[in-house]
Image (tube, rainbow, N blue to C red; front, top):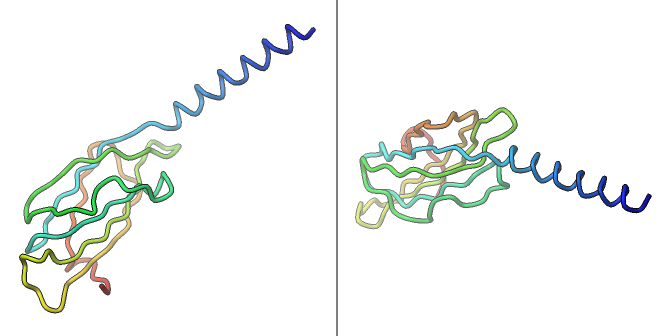
Length: 121
């Protein structure tokens, strides 16, 4: 009986681990700076409790970078970003922006533009 119980417990743990591995699927999301200047950027994965996936770091005007984020049960990604003027822009006062994007498919591109999503610095 103890042997059967141990086998059942081991099977349950193995199935739970397999289920977790399936729900932890990652997808690729491209972040593109469509702003009129360089930005200091931070991107977080909302499906992972706000884990940082980029930055804080610089992203030049017109440049892009690809990040991996966790997919939700529907296979979609969810990110939040915050950006501010890079020092070389010489913008006074600083310009900032932030946004939240959900339902992102694998291979999606998210445009970063402080003018479209202004926020206080």
